[in-house]
Every structure is written in structure tokens, then in C-alpha cells.
Length: 207
Image (cartoon, rainbow, N blue to C red; front, side, top):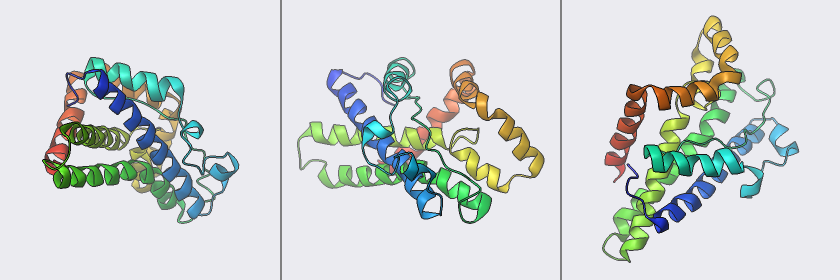
């Protein structure tokens, strides 16, 4: 998807990641607060300040490296803390907190795609190309974070509807989830191909 990047395009990707991850994590925090849990507020995460949410290694360096090598940005921000026992609607409330992040990326991708359609041919090509990259990155963030493996956000939706034995198994994966996910993406070609195909289908719909 994001192949053959030049230096200016990498800068656009970097800026897009900072904006998109900040909004993604802030929406987790705001969703938890709106549903009755002030944990994120007490930790200073009810903020659109990127410094509150990004990790220099996993949020900035890792996605640039994986983007260049694998053509898909893989990354992780600082997890937003929340107490699932304090949010409204129990497990469904926790699912809403989890889904708030990736769906903010989907909304940004839809808005970006709309701007591409409106501005294409009416503004400088560089602006349109930057918007296309903005859409691509946010689609990638949406698809990746919807993988239903802890600690990714999609696991919260699965956890809300799964029977208790499955919930217990998912909880046991929590501490190893990131390694498992990167292992699946990097070591099992079919899994990476699946993610790329999902990205491509969603981009075809939007663009």
C-alpha cells in the first residue's frame, strides 16, 4: 500500500502518525471518562497533546521501520489506563472504550477520502498525495487495531460477547499479546497478506 516512499512522503507519514495516534488514544480516554471512569483523567490522558500519548520507540521509530520494510506501519502507543469495573454497561462499556480508538481512525480516513474527492484536480498534487497518505495510514491503524487479540482494541469487542472460558484465555494472553501479534505479522506470511488485503479493500471503497 505505502510503497516507494520518498523523504517528503515519510515526513507526511510521520506527521500523520502523530496526529492519528494522538486522536486515537485521546478517544479511548474520553470514552472511558464519558462512561464513568476517571482513571485516564487522573493520569493526564484526557488531552490532545501528543506527548501524553506517544512512545518514541513503539509509536515513532517502529512504524517507520516496518513501513519501509513491510509497507505496512506497525506500532503501539502508550496504553490508556481505564478500569473496566467502573465504566457503565460493564463489558459492553469496556468494548466501547476499546472501539473508540480505531473507529476514530476510520472516521479520519473517511473524512480524508472525502477531501481527496473534493480537492483532486483543484489543488496542488502534493496536497492530494498527502491526504491519500493520511487515509492510507488511518485505514492501516483501523485494520491493525481491530485484530481481536489482546491487548489490541478489537479484543475488547470479542471479550464482551465471548463465553467465560474464552475470556479467561484472552486474559492470559494479555501480557504476551504484542509479541504474538508481531510474530503473526512478521513470521506468518498469510496473516500479513490478510491484513494487506483488508487494507486494500477498505482503501478501494474509500478512494
